[in-house]
Image (cartoon, rainbow, N blue to C red; front, side, top):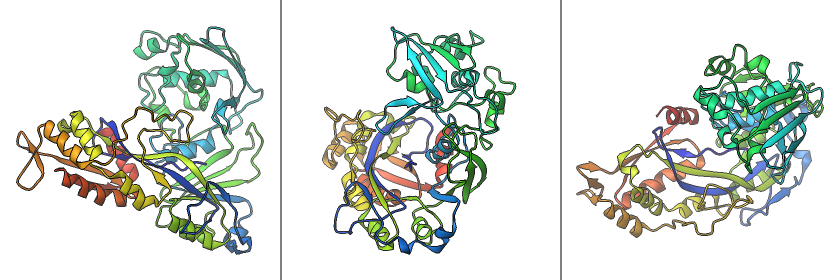
Length: 459
């Protein structure tokens, strides 16, 4: 299970990715380890005294409880806007084509697939006797329906299926075709997907989770997704667990899916318990959670170590935090201003304060552990307030009487919208001080994460 750390956002609806704050290693727990004076090595450090496991955890024979932060309740794998909702959908839905631990594509709901010699036609064969969690059959029609929804002109989720270049997809989206010509159901177990050009990511794009046409597609017509959206809080999937109930701010409950294609999970019940940095250690310490994620700092690791019963898994995380610039703001439309803000923020100080040796400054939006990471030729934008001031001067922003820069009678004032978390608690004072030194007045606003995402979406 992954614990996704959301990016930090400014307040408007149009954004340009700008500041990558820190790539981190995440300590994920049943867990604990190493002393606060040492950097813990990656991997699992086992518990030192399992007899210290809390009584409440021992009494919980048929349920695993894992920590999660701030789900929003959009439990559809193609519509969520919150990384924690994605964690929930990963429990409920299975992928058509999955990934192994090395990032290779492997069979999921699809038993096999073939690709034509010109790499444009994909023939996908489903496993026999697949069903959704309610026992209804899962067929090639459901896969075709799912891909059609992603090509619907009203679809506004984050999955960009247009990159798969499915033949007829653009016409369907534009309203000049009533169906997607590149999707052909050969038989209940076989779907043929024809594309207009080869693509290295096509198989992964078309191999995502599968939605039930009978459940999500009642009365579906092109451009009409309103009914589907009403089901965000009542998901029907085909993954290892079945959604039972969401108690906002408290927990999300599931039971094992007896129709799961890999077999019924051995643990009958699963709960995502909503936690946060101020509560997660206490809940883990008292046995109310079995698994959670903690900031990988020496103090946190030492606390977990002292419990005795915890196992720590410290791993290189693909998570990163970021500040996004709203390029609808006139000042931020100037690339020199955006560059100045990057040069003017001491990101190394930020991660030293927060992660104390377990993080590094990110210079691109991808983790160094990824095969795709390549920092060659990328400007690291090391902290350089003198360069920041020079760029602002060149952009026409001159210091005013109080040091805040002014251009055409307007002060250089920016609003930073953030959620409450450890990183942001450190970011706010550091950013305010750093940017004031270069003549920028920062006005931070701290809101609930879901409120932040809603404001980001609507502007």
